[in-house]
Amino acid sequence: MNVIPLRQPETKRRKSEAAPISPTFGISSEVKDWAQSRGITKLAERLEHFTDYCRATGKEYKDFDAAFRNACRQDWARLGTNDGVQAMTCAKCHGSLSNGWTGSSKGKLCNSCYASR
Ligand SMILES: [Zn+2]
Image (cartoon, rainbow, N blue to C red; front, side, top):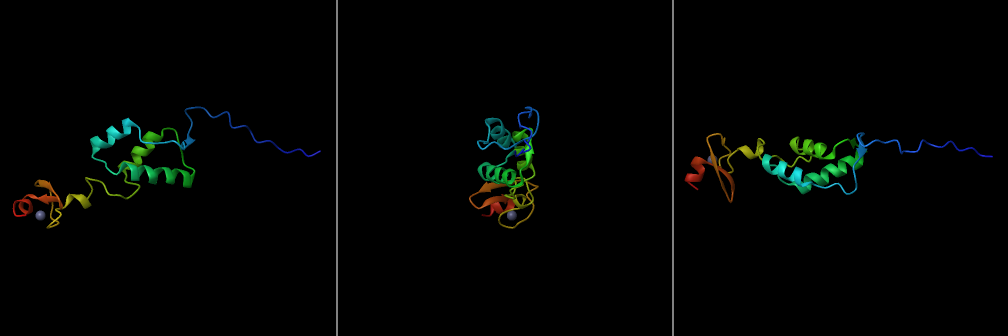
């Protein structure tokens, strides 16, 4: 008679323990509001990168909203952040925007470029 060792049934998992990402994980309205208040954009792309990252690595988290916020903050998807170095230069002269800027169809322009556009 063959005795096949049985694995422990995985029913012991408590709610507070880390778990793999849900196949239905999405952007909650909470995270949406948070991203908006931080000026974080491209949420759909960030979500796609995050979910693929979790599935690819088998990453488990206790709180996926928090993990996703970290992914946004640290720009895991490398999409650039609105307040990152890339975005903080004038679209025309590539100078600093620290003295103020104005958004235009070409991007953020420093005051002098905006005045002479
Ligand atoms: Zn400029």
